[in-house]
Length: 595
Image 1 (cartoon, rainbow, N blue to C red):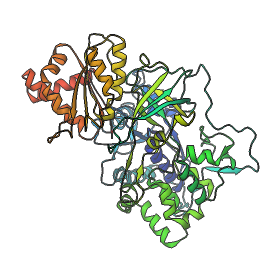
Image 2 (cartoon, one colour; image 1 turned 180 degrees about the horizontal axis):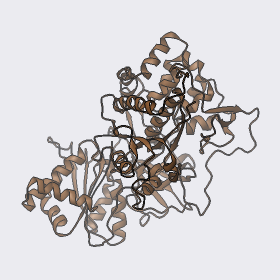
Image 3 (cartoon, one colour; image 1 turned 120 degrees about the vertical axis):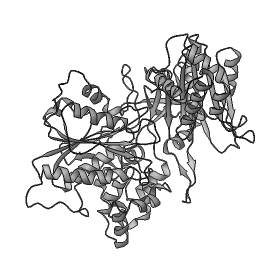
Image 4 (cartoon, one colour; image 1 turned 30 degrees about the vertical axis):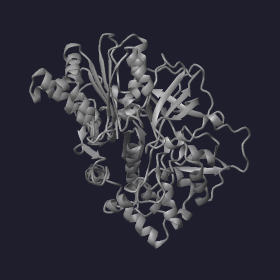
């Protein structure tokens, strides 16, 4: 091994940055270089001044925010008191993972790169800006960036003389070893326990919330199944405000767990303990010790996700069948990414389905590599659609159940939405582990500030919370633009809105896109209400919010709003643009969108 240590630090929200960081760790291992891979918030940032070689991998979340597991690091790094030459002995590089359909594309990586330069760090190469929208996905940028990174790094930090790199087809050591127990341990409790009464629920200790109701709110003939779900959080100490989000981790479907165990000849009722093969790698905190195979497969391993390239890289090292080996090596290579996209990403083929397509290789798999192959199930976030002031000890969400067809025979299903939709409280108590975190939307404290909200579809969820909360505080200047396909099929919360309009708590403007020949969307209604909007924004300092799908809607609404400014304010296109920018900088324009 080389005497130099490469430190790979990642900030990851959905697991992609972590996967990329672990891939760089494997590449370092093959190049005989010592390495450590850590989440930014578990790393002691004060040690950064004594590091010599670091790669930062970071995603961007929300409206240009750092991921949850790099927020502490972020606050420390941007302290004004840090001297300008703090990192003058550090060689580093920054790789950002983003999506150019969002306005603040790779904002965190760009800002981090700039800050590291300010602190005197030596950049080995320009910041990498990977893009989900690239034809080949993020790897279209990551592959050439890594090629360049290794050329630079190995010229500055050469590997030990006489040691050849470990070939791609050779197995690297597994990160963990499974030790199966002969007997089932006494009183093994893996299911959820109520957290300490004083502690706030977290991802490691979520609160088991009972499902109170789970109702479909779209007409039975409507193509989309949308659910209104309520959870009982009595005794959890959870407090939340409008704009906050509830987090939960789904479970794999029982038929998938069964199929996985059959494929790998695993007994779901067996128990094991896990040890790390490397002192710098900790056993995952969410896995109990000892742990059952059922818990591991049902609640930890993400077997129903579309596998990333790293999955094929590890799988290929087990292949002995010539045809399977050839295909897996192709899918692992930079040249084979188009083939991999056609096989996996476009039809949304799951990791479990891949294992069934490669039976010889699956039969050769060693159980010790399960955590190298499969990532951990990531938590999902949902905008809270209720207020504690109207629904004490309750959290409500609006959930669109994801189900669609691809070239594959079996319909594709969203893991979390399908799991939640399947829970039936009428058949007995059902509990969901959850916790709450601050959302990106902030509503004004000033009772006189009007609030304008544009929330088509399930984008209305945070605004239902806001209207309930504001009405309870006597804040009645609320305008909601709601859009859906049909008044009779997917007009969520209709009776509640009508009651609140009648009580003078809000103004409601609706757009039903398919109820007439010409499609009418929320952006058309925004233009129609130009006088009202100009009065509220220009004369009464209103706040403007958008929530919903990130395809065209947010841009179309922004364009409509700028047209309102031009028409009613008599200003130019540039001035309208500047006005919206100024509103965004002062928090009077906010959006929360998802793809």
